[in-house]
Image (cartoon, rainbow, N blue to C red; front, side, top):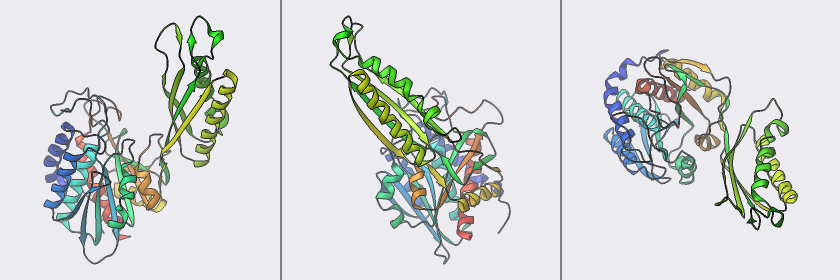
Length: 391
């Protein structure tokens, strides 16, 4: 097997992939509504002669490419959905759908995986089966889990699964991953504080839900510093507080929403317990009633060691400067559900611009995918498929 894969062999693919990526950017679709995107994906894969199934887990699409006699299989995954946010960029291909924006680069991920399918289908230089998995609803809606529940791995067996995500914090031409946790588990908490409400000029006649909420918020932000071992990593953030409609009324209800991010399930358990304990204490102290809803919606994204090594080797073969990530990120990723079922790895592909304007962070209203990294992404996907089937 060659020790180096040059990006040049795929140069002829790039103009069409850039056009495709920008078309997807101009027509973003939200979770489970990726009908147009899925249609483009399905048509693109069928033109290559792949076996294609659509409607998996909602709007998911999978294409299967089988060559040779090996029974080995590998899955390559790209996410398709956009974010419910206004785009403030001024590109010619900016979003034509108000309030919907490809602010995380999933348009680029789709284009890269279609490019990898085109390259592998024409080179025919592997032995085994590659499953190209186009997943809906990554942005907090659990599309990976839906595909799995819909029989993804029974219908398309995968010995290993791999995925990448563009990473503006890393320079263009680089890539990182690591064995173990690469992305955090994501939890959401919703706390309701209720009292009978009353006149703001007569606070002695009612429990004060706003005062109780303010005390609770302060206490919640002590959990990480006082309940979690300092050598561990965790984040707790209160992100929304709502209650009250008038300057002279003490409201009967206040809502507090926030998120918790962890890598260790034991720490995750401890934080949830601490939140519930503090809420109960506030209820007793202030004479209010309380309710806690706690949703562990994404688990940590945990790479298996051998597959993390394959991912880094593939990055080197793709001409990238590959290195082991020193730590995981507190952002979350529902590829985690696939990694709970199969060995695999998730790679960060650097897209921080080395020329021109600086790359905007993910989920920024000004964010745009860097088309200059499309070729490297295609090369990595091809390399990781070949390596996984060769092992």
